[in-house]
Image (cartoon, rainbow, N blue to C red; front, side):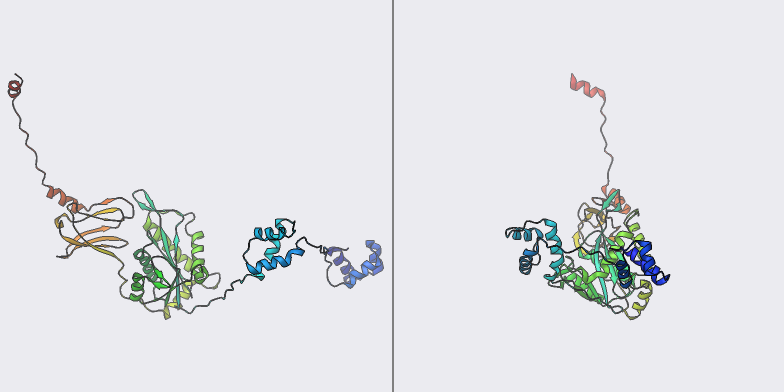
Length: 396
C-alpha cells in the first residue's frame, strides 16, 4: 500500500510535470495498476486496521441495562456484575467502554452563556489567603478576602478581613462597593453561613445591610458555582497573580497592595470581553444608583460597666478604659479600625484605641496609665530605726 508521501509524489509528477504513467512505472518500480489507482484517487491513502471482535461485545447489552438503572455505577461494580456472566477481560477495556457510553445514560447539564445589563448584578465570594497575614507583634493570622465582580464590566474589588462573621464580611462588602463607586441592583452570594438564614432567606443583619443601601440579594443553589462564574474566574486569576512572590509588612500593607493590584487588573484587557473592565465600569456607573451619603453602621456595640481593673476585652485583647469612670456604664463600639468607649450618662470619651489584630495583647493608653499611677497614691513607708542597745537588752 502506498503511503501518503508516495501518493502525493506520483500525482505531482504526472499532473504537474506531465510525466507519463509508463515512465512513473519505470522510475518507481510500482505496477501499472498501482500507479493508475493512485492517480485516480483524489483522497490520500488511509491505513485502516480491520475491526476485531471484542471480549466485551457479548456483555454490552448487560452493561447498558446496568447503566440504565444507575448511570453512576462504577467501573469496578460493572466488571464484577459481568464477570459473573463469564467476562474474563481486564479493567481497561471496561473503563474505556464506560467512558464512551456513560454520557448516553447521564443527563449532563448544559450551560447557556449569560449576558448582563449594566449595573444589573454583582457577584461575591470569600477567598482564604494561602498563607497567614502578618498582624504585628511578630504574629501571623488566618485571613480571608471578600471579593466582588460586576457582571457587565467584570470590574472587581477586594477587602481583607480576619473573621467570617457578619460584621466583618459586610464591612468587606461595603468597602468593595465604595471602591466600585456605585450600587448594583442585585448581590449574588453562595450560601455563606453568616449571611444565609436558610431557604434562600438572608439573616437579619444582612437584610438590614441590603435595606440601608438599598440593594437586592440572591443566594445560589447548593453546589452551583457556575451561577457566579464571573467572580470565581476573577478569584482564580487573583490566586495565581496576586499572592505569589509578594511579601507583606502587615495587614494594612496587604490591603494597599491588594487595592493597587485591582487597579491594574481592572485596567487590563479582559480575555472574554476584549475590553478593559475600567472602561466598561464607566458605562456601568452611568446607569447605576449613586452611593448613599453614609456607609451602613456595622460596628459591634455592647454596654458594660467599667471594672476596678479598667479594661475591656475583645478578640482576646484587653483595651484600657478611663480609670476615672470606674463603676459607670459605657458603650463599647468596635469597628475594623478602632475600639471606642463612651460614657452613657455624660457622653464623655472613655477610650479610643486603634484595633489590634494580634492575639492576647494588652493595649493601654498613655493617659490611662498616668491616671492609674496618680490614683494609686503610693506613699513612702517610714521604717523605725532603733539603736543597737535595744537589741543587746533583748539578747541578754
